[in-house]
Image (cartoon, rainbow, N blue to C red; front, side, top):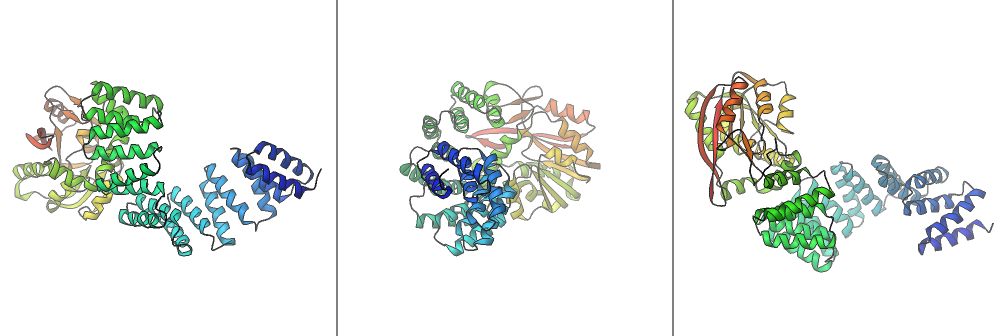
Length: 495
């Protein structure tokens, strides 16, 4: 065989022109003669990684590291291989090894931050990105990664600042324009978000995700025809983009084009059967009444509402359910009303808690949406806040309550029996159950085309009797408006 070093030079040339299998064959010949040759092991790891053979890459790179533990690039590529294998803790340790050997390696700090972010250690990730930026303040890639991490933490002002700064240094950074649009949209600065997406599309028109995001921004403004056009552009680029198919179906549903919406929903579910939110929307336009809205649907809906929830409900929909619920308590219980322990089921940002705070000693809030809970935390209304499914969360508590209340939860639950059972098990002897349902004129409950459930008085009265409640009060009210039309509900006080 020729000199191994000359052979390795030939391998490097072959890798550069993409002749990976030929390069791999030469490396394997070298290793038959010198199985501990670190350069050959390293290059075999690089080749195997590029060929998607990460199991082999891991074996040979670990062997090389054991021979030359001070070789920085070995730890670096090993970190990427661990990442591709889903072994995030090992990837983190590899990039920490790079930093130990080269403390001023900007991209090692960036890579470590990315791994920490992905593994859920977002505050530590911010620290790593800050260290990278202390070494290279104008690094747009690091600023972008830091911005995404702030966004995941709900720190939208900080996220915005990172993206703006990244674009100062790299104005044509397409990914940053898209991410900036996402943050602006979450901040409800939708016109600015649209501008960012359009700038991104001008620079790179063939990214389906950006067209989908632009369509989502149009959705939030009720610009359904423009949303339809943007979803179709996304699908022209990627016909199997399930999220875009689902979004297109939703926009068509809002335009009253139900048959077309059904077609898009079904196509999305063929591609990705796990999209329970799309399955719920499909049921709503085909007349199927399911037992409850899927968790995925409710989380996505209310996470999207969180930043503008109170304004949207109170100003846009003229929502007044909390006032109706308070009026019932004032009428039925009177001035002596006081509850030492109470729980707000589906607390949202705290509209109902705010209305009842003066009547309650210790107030617990439960909501499925993490972003809603973040908003509720800022209000300072609640003594304790819990993220989770209300039924599962209540059943996991030892606490007894004098009041369980709920304003806008039951429109997302059809079959209420299991909730009644959970509440009954956690009320004190004289505890009260206060809630509102959307009104249905008929038996039991129905899923409407807006994705919300309505319940009949007959159904609720039957559940009250089944679970041992006494109905103290029931009253039909107008609790919000939808496209200028009154939406009727019924307020119940049970004991």
